[in-house]
Image 1: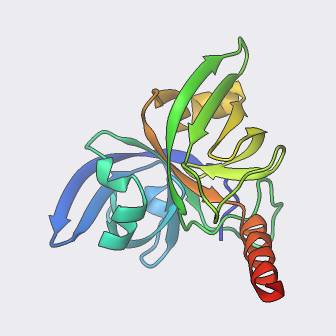
Image 2 (image 1 turned 180 degrees about the vertical axis):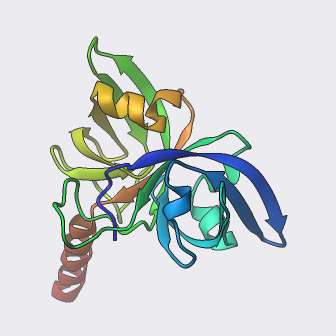
Amino acid sequence: MFTGIVEATGIVQEIKHNESNIDFILSCPFTQELKIDQSLAHNGCCLTVVEVTEDYYRVTAINETLEKTNLGQWKVGTEVNLERCLKFDGRLDGHLVQGHVDKIGVVQNIVDKEGSFFITISYGQSNEYTTVPQGSITVNGISLTVAESNSDDFSVAIIPYTWDFTNMKNLKIGDTVNLEFDIIGKYVNKLMKNNAAYKI
């Protein structure tokens, strides 16, 4: 379980293809603190640390993960948002994030608001996923508040600190991002669907 508060960014150092899987070797500021079997969110996608050296660590993305996320688009040098799993002895600063990417979104627009950045992301028509104004959404592992919500896209406002500290500053129109919709909203959506089907 995660909070969507990015702890640091890492850099992809090497990519190794292993049948249908991909091994990513990365470096980050807390590499030496990592342990094998530890869960670590990469752009919002939970991956297990399988090897740790003095300077690098390795994670493996299986084919299912590659199909649902944008990890397959990573290259050597890609900057990745990182968050270690939640410790239940501190404050929950973001919102409850599972690290299970629901789908990929596409950046439609980026507007510099002279102090913040307004980003619009489309995700296609969906009966499964929805956003609401002032609700929570996870974009590339970052817990954000929805500013505007439509049936197939939403917008978020990014403060300068988040822009500078995460890989948001690297986004361009047309780029893909990993999306995890709010878990409470997903449960409510499913319950309402089931109740509607029951009444019919």
